[in-house]
Amino acid sequence: MASQEGAGAQEAAQLVASSLGFRLIDADIVTRAAVEAGVDEGAVADIEQRKSRVMRLVEGLGSSGLGAGYAVPGAYIVGPPQPASDELRGMIRSIIEETAAKGSAVIVAHAASMALAERADVLRVLLTAPAQTRERRLAASLGVDEKEAARAVKRSDSARGDYIKRFYGIGAELPTHYDLVINTEKLSPEDAAELIIQAAGGRAGT
Image (tube, rainbow, N blue to C red; front, side, top):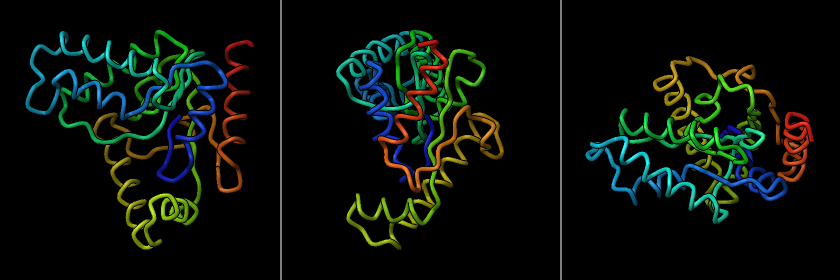
């Protein structure tokens, strides 16, 4: 499940994970695990050893019910913060792929839809909404005025586009990069989650 800022993907992903009994893995979990493993832009030596440690921490944090996003009949996805370095980005991509391979996970982290694009056993989901709708939601959730929220949405959209272009070589994110695109302008997180659950159930044959 990928998402634009303010489209409500985090809430929907949490509902999906809870309903399906999947692990919930989001960008915060991956970042926290990397920090705990001592991985930062200046410390990516012994990459395989560090990757193994981060993977163990990700699994533990995800099992505790923190997180949100992508679907391999088992897994789901949402939008990316900026990893610090090419080495770290490569490690995170590898961790996303390993998490997806284990199945039963909702992944909302680091453009996971793009990382898992070649997998036939995933459901790639994008949640979106008009910019003004997202700005209003962000203003309400952060307690800021709509001008500040508009700037935040613009920065987030720009960073997302830049990340996808630099790391995945994709110049423009398209609806065809996803299996399911949901406009949440008039849909609640519960509505979006129900659509995703139905689509994931169809994929999983349940």
